[in-house]
Length: 278
Image (tube, rainbow, N blue to C red; front, side, top):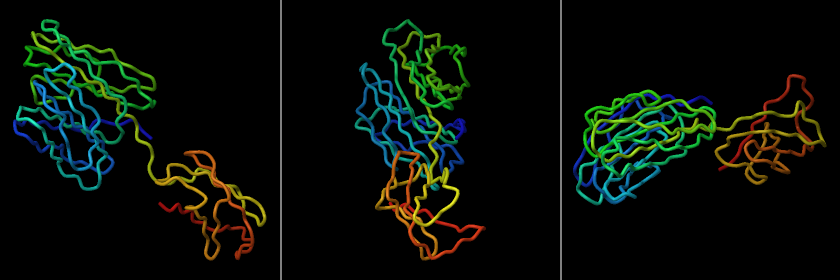
């Protein structure tokens, strides 16, 4: 596993009741797509197609909303359509990371005029190799943004919006603030992007040898389907074993009772296939 890396960004604005989300170029299978939609006035919770997760929605202060959608990219991605209940200008920001899964998220509204501060709320990172995406906007274009906030700035294409990303570790939090020269309300959003969990079955270890009338153990992890005594087999030619027990949870310990086998002793060993049926 590795820390997710920021790749690219796309931006668009739309005033209708639906929008085709802007998409960065070069999206590959396994990339993490993060779409942030924000408005300056309150609209109902938007919906999205193409299998995205509706991660977050906040309209608690009554003068704007922020909505966040995420998806781990497939081998063939097309731009999703976002649908709204009202006609109002929506600003759509799409961030692309090479990998990762969406973790903790929170938002903070600066509801009083004249304070000139975007605050990014504290959130906890679960993994040691995480990235924190900080997204902030004001209700009107500020004269300047103070670029002293921690992290690397993303050019958002929208002069009322600012975004940063920074590497964080397990248990890390941020209480970052961003000053701007204006007299506007503002919102800050913090999203943790955790390192991806490995996909696909991994054999972690096996017993060194297999003998008749003994038990043989296999330790495996990250299967697409959890192994059970009813859906798991260990096969070599005409010989098929089913586990007498399955213990643990990622990793799993599979115990096979070995009876009579058609194969004889061979110092070079035999290839066995572990299969877990969905």
